[in-house]
Length: 141
Image 1 (tube, rainbow, N blue to C red):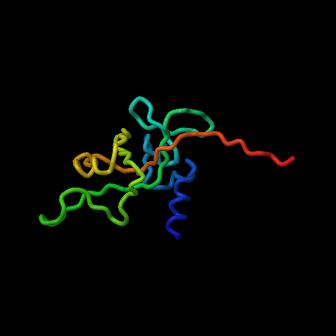
Image 2 (image 1 turned 180 degrees about the vertical axis):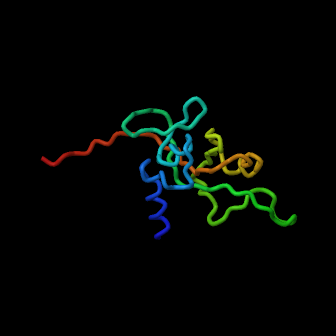
Image 3 (image 1 turned 180 degrees about the horizontal axis):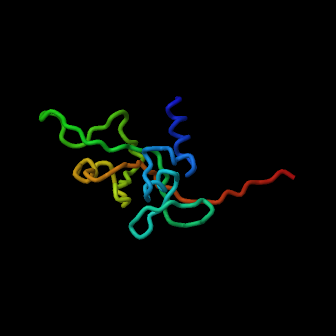
């Protein structure tokens, strides 16, 4: 239970808090790591401020995976190995490349079919498609 609380607190880092964090680089990937919600615009993911409104599909970060390259025995599976839990089937992968470019895939199966896509990837985010709505809450008189 404690691990879950730690991951939630990492999502809510402010830019000032993140300066000492080694996993955040000084590029566009930093913006994605600091925001829970983003949208696809012109083929790229961009942070979405909740003060704005859009009818487009938004993507909320549900999980994050660091990408590492390892050598294994020839008889081991040759695609992708997961350390810990596998990604949720409710999420879709968003690839964050080392140069800051982002790519949203249709499914985890698509990523597993072509693991060579991970050669220049820094992080893979598991995202959930969501939409923005307004809630009118009745006030007590």
